[in-house]
Amino acid sequence: MSITQGKPGSVCVYCGSSSGADPAWLAAAARLGEILAHAGVRLVYGGGGVGLMGACARAAHEAGGAVLGVMPRFLIGAERPVTGVETVVVTSMHERKIRMFEEADAFVVLPGAIGTLEEAIELLSWRRLGLHAKPIVFYNPGGFWDRLFALFKSFIDQNLVPGSFSQCWSVVESVEEILPAIVSAPRDVQVPHHVAARS
Ligand code: AMP
Image (tube, rainbow, N blue to C red; front, side):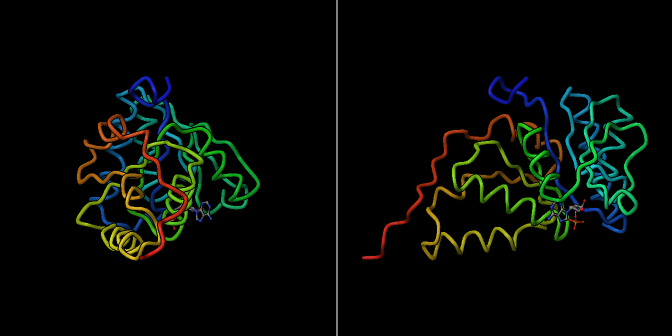
């Protein structure tokens, strides 16, 4: 089922690969995996068995959900795919990202580090350019992403992007809000290419 009919068929989750992350975040990632599985939504993810990504995938798989991992060959040793989960092996990070993008109807960003940030930023930059209209939801426990949102606000305040840019993503404080936020995300947001010159 595609997102245009309501519930997404597949949701891509970007999240941290550190197993030393806050245990509450690891638990939230696992809870999201269960929620997706119980809702019949396929999880698309980076393919690793470590950190939040592993927690989410393992929980979705154990709850009977469909899971697709996309793993670059050179990271197999470091990120250790989850046994039993369908994992596509690709050759590069770029191939991983485009495959994850193409396989998903919507995207969720959980707490993470440089890899998560890079994936989220690319997705937002493509959204800003009108290359896709897929929902993007940030899970923001304890205001984890607030500094990023403050930077985005400064882009708008400084006339670097139109104000409508801020409608390209949603922010939720609980994992239970993620699927509803995807379903209710606006699809028709236009972000004009140019911002008018200052008078
Ligand atoms: P991190 O948030 O740094 O823990 O990374 C989360 C995931 O993003 C890990 O699976 C990384 O391998 C992955 N990652 C890091 N950089 C990139 C990139 N440039 N393209 C795609 N995935 C990446």
